Image 1: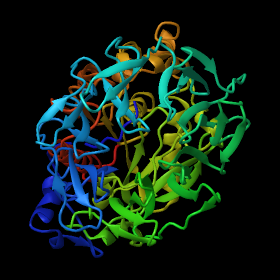
Image 2: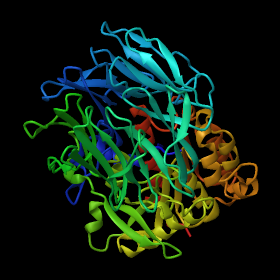
Image 3: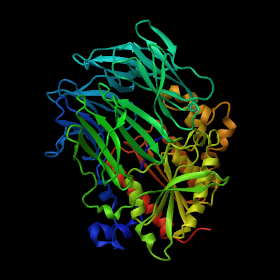
Image 4: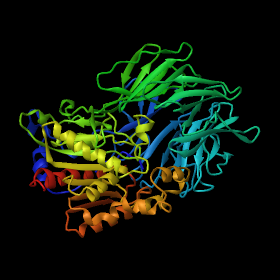
Length: 639
C-alpha cells in the first residue's frame, strides 16, 4: 500500500493566505517568505525519460497542465517542452517512443483505479488502446532486443495472475508467451527470447528465482537456497544467458549477483554497505548502472563494463543524481537531479564530450530556493533502545532564540516504505508554514538492513507506533519544539499509523491527519485488488491472516477502537482507491464524530490511492494546513 501522498481543508488559513495572496514578498519572517499551496504546486512534477529514435529529443511525464501528460524536449535544451498528450481527466504516463519511428507508447487508467491499459499515439496524432480491456491491468515490461516487438504483462486471462505477452509493433498483434499458474511472476526476457526469468514470493524474507525455457517449455529453479534468503531477478546481461539478480544471502543488505544459465557459474557484480537494489546494463553492455540506497538517499554509480572502472559523473550543486537512462547508441545519458529542497530536473550528459545540459527548471519561479529547508538525517533511541532513523526539517524560524514551534511527525507509506531525502512539496509547504517536521523511518522501513526491515513483522500498529511516539522525545530534546503541539500525519500505511496513534495512544499527539489510511485490517486484507494475488501470502505472513489471525487484526484495527479517539482528526480519501477502499474512511469518520471530536473529511470523487490532479492536491494541501493551524497552532494546548 505504499504511495507518495499529499492533502486538504478551509478555516484559519485566512490568516496565512491573506498575507500570501497579495505576493510572496509581502509576508516574511527573518527574511523567509511564506508561500501559498498554489505557489508550491506551481512547481512541476516530472519523471521518466525516453530518447527518440534519432536521439534528438527526450520524452517525459509532467503535471504541468494540472494532470499528468507526456511531453518532449530537445536534448540540447533548445526551445520549450512540447506537449504530446492532452488528457484532462486521466493521468497519462509516458513509456517510450517506438524504436524506428516517433509513435509513442503510454499507459493510463481511469480515475486512479490502477487498471492501466497501454496506448499508442500514432504518427498522425490518433490514439489507439492496444490492450483494450477495462477490467484488465496491463503493464509494459521491456522492448525486445531486435526492437520489432515489446513484452508486457496482463491479467486479462485471470484477474489474479499476470501472464507475459509479446506484441508485434507493426500491426499490434500479440501472443501469450508465458502463462502464470499463480505463483511465478515474469520479470525479464533474455535477448534471444529463449529464457524468461520468474520470481516466486514466499514472504518478504524469502523469494525464489525460476526460469522458463521457451524452447523446451520447462521451468527450472535458479540457485535454490534453503532458509530465509531473498533472491530477486533483475535482468539479463545483453546478448547472453547471464541472469542478474539481487540477494541478501549471508548479508544484512542486498547486493547484485549473476548466474550464467549455460553453466551455472555465479559471480558477484556489485556490493556496498547499504542496499544495492537495482542494476542494469546499457543496450550492448558497454555501461553498467548501479543504484544504492545509502542512508535515505539514492546514490548512482556508472561503470565502463570492459574495465570495471567507475565513470566520473558531473558534480551538481542542486542535488544528487537520482535516475539514469542511457540511450541505445550509448552516446547520451538522461538523468534526474533531486534533493530534499529541489524537485526533479532533467539533464542530458554526453559521454563523448563529458558535458551536460540542464533541460528543465521544475521549481516554481515564485519560490526562492533559499526559503526552502534541506532535510537532515538524524537518529534517536526508541522505547527499547533500538536506533531509529529519520529526516528532520527545521524551519528557518526555529533559529530564533527562545522560540517554541509546533511540530509534525510524518509517517511514510508501506508497510515497508521509506522516507528519503527527495523533494516533497507537502513537507516543504508545512515547514514553510512554521511546523518542525520529522519524517520517521520506523522499524520495518526499507534501506536499513533485513533485521530492521523484519522487526515489525506481525507487530504493526505496536512497535512501529512506539517508534513514532518516541520521536516526541527526540523533538523535545531539540529545545525549539513545543511538545504540547505535536501532530502525527501520514499516507497509506502511514495513515493507518495516524489512526492507531489516536486510538491506542489517545493523548500522545495533539491531532492526526490520515491520508488514504487503513482503519480495518480485516476488511483491507480480505479486499486487496485481485492483481495483488501473488503478494497475498506475503501480506498475510507479514501483517496477519484475516481468518487465522482475526482476533489480532481486530485488536489492531482503529475502527473497532474509535470510541477512544479524543483528538481532532482529518481524513483524506480517493473514491476510486482500489487499495484502501472508501468505506475505510467513511466508517472511521462516522465513528469518531460520535465522540464529539472535530473531524474533517475530504473525499475526492476522481482520485485513487494518491493524487493525479493538481487542483485536488492543492485543495488537500490547503486543508491540512488550515486544520493544523486551527487545532494546533492557534488553539490552547490540550491536556
